[in-house]
Length: 91
Length: 139
Image (cartoon, rainbow over all chains, first blue to last red):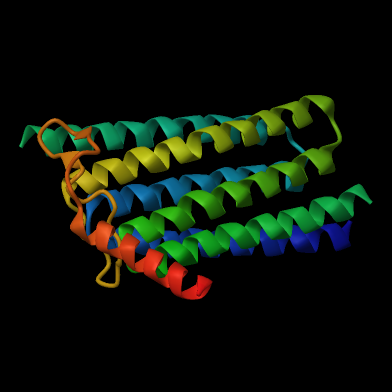
């Protein structure tokens, strides 16, 4: 049990570090598409954190939350892209 | 055995996600950032979902994780393409070291239609240069 818990902790630490690095790009990003790409990566990382939580707590509910998060991430990215393109065409 | 596969796959997936985050911080350009973001993050989350399927050993969870992997593989290229296209129209600057912009002049910036007809002298000259090199090699 302990030999299994230690990799889960390492994976959580790596994912939190990755999320922190992606947040730096979200804050810095010079243009709006940069921020959208950073948000995409952040959503993928949080879906991965939910999937690892499925392993750590042995609760399959977290996996459903990860699926819903992936779906919403795709819809959000497509909506941002449509908005950007329409704004570029309108002006 | 299954737990070892799950542990290795989980560590691999977390490493790929970490690489994706480092890539979007370190790359110089939106378009280079986008390719690390879409490819490495898709691979990372697929590895982690494979780890979930191997660890839980439940048919319902396996089906769900496989479906989620398929969903990621279908949607990540579409989302990356739409963001890249919108960024090209908005006019996000390319990196200074960019050699080839194959889309330059091919988009009608008013209607956002792609066309093949405008003459591109740079590409023609580079093609003839490549052909000359081929001839030299053959000789």
